[in-house]
Image (cartoon, rainbow, N blue to C red):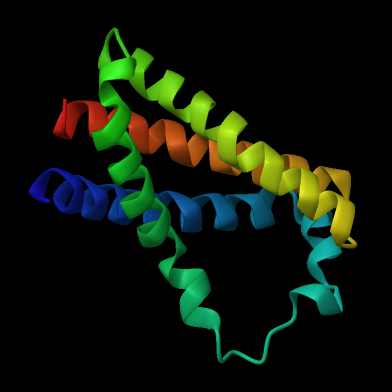
Length: 135
């Protein structure tokens, strides 16, 4: 359990920081892109905001378990293992979710593409960390 919890928490903290840094930078440098989020689909009454803020920890724990279970399939340096891990996760999990999201919700292709890239980068960062913390 220690092989999953500790790396998951470390990755959660780092992904939390990366997520908010990326959000801040995105709004600062691409404000036109974020105008599309002024849509009733994205408005919340605030009662579920903690789900949004805890996302980095939920995904980190899930990815940590996934890493611990399948790490033997990834070979090479920490960077190579993390990159392969992120690509596998993105193709197996993120791509199908983005496909159904785009087909079912009124969101733009650019939004969905940015979410896919974000999910891929999260998994790559987590994979590199896991390769170092739980080789």
